[in-house]
Image 1: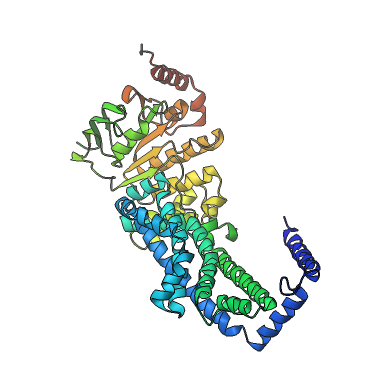
Image 2: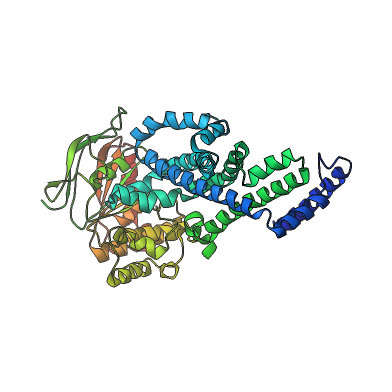
Length: 253
Length: 249
């Protein structure tokens, strides 16, 4: 579908036009028009009003994503490799995920304060599970004949892990990471909702308090772009750094 | 005693019925043995036990008088699927058995290229497996199995998924390689014609037992004409009867 990007752009223009149309029949407090929101967004970006908030949320997202993904990946590898550890920890991992993490946010603010730490912890917790689940599944779904090949080659457990299980499982691991990237933004913003004086989530709460709906929409647009940007970076890494693992060299052909 | 001796091996998987029952056999050095039988008769289990991938419930496999308890050191293995690592190029796949443990030398890299040339896929050495046809992937798998110049080669229906012409080409290439490297080969196939064409000895397996052995008395190297000879057809008839359980005359 080579026309898909063009259709996508036309769809966007159509949606913005529809938004503009609907907004004119409603109060700006309820639904500000794009002709109000986009100039405001542009002006505030130019003045640097958003910059510290963007940086704050960015740091929380990246730190939480890094910590959560790293621990999720490592524990996923261990639980995939050692059935006894999987049996031991699985009920606790599932229980920890069954608890709505957003409901835990106030508790984390209580424990870790109003600073960045509580937001990073929430973000990390949210990012942890997709990586854990996908890594663990990837470790367990390795082709039996390939495992036999490694046995024939007298590979150690560690060699099999490094040379077979992780590379072979990378497509599944990366799909978990893509989910985690999007969820990381949710984690950071929700953390900021609970208590923060900086960050895009805090700005939404502040704009709500000031009844400044255009500002709220401007922040929402920023968050959407932020999420898409992060997702796009992951896709680029997949295409240019991990291509041979994910596409078997298809890009090189 | 030199060679592989299979001494009364029996096996079953976790409470299932017996897959192998008191199998005795001997594989001499430099010989090409082919195992034919219906699906589920125990061929793959037999191959796994003989190669050391699986330990028999009872009985033992001896190599030069020593019991085989783990995968043989100087053996190559070709599985039913090519089991190539998709993220490595053809050349990297062939060198992988060496590179798993250490960096390959210049000579080993040259040897890998020579093997790929023998398998007629040297022009694809920098391609990735997904860019190759099924037959080409099988050739890479065979080259990989031979990179360490093994004394034994175990093949588990390596050409099962290929078309007839590609199979015949690969059979010729395999025979040339085995003659060149003086290997002892144990080859599993469903295909009676394939077994007769490549093997010195054909074993027929039925319900976990070797029910018939046949020495293929056709000269080597084998040629395409032999496939249409009366002797080839006679051998085919004998083996087919053995597979169908008809007692030999």
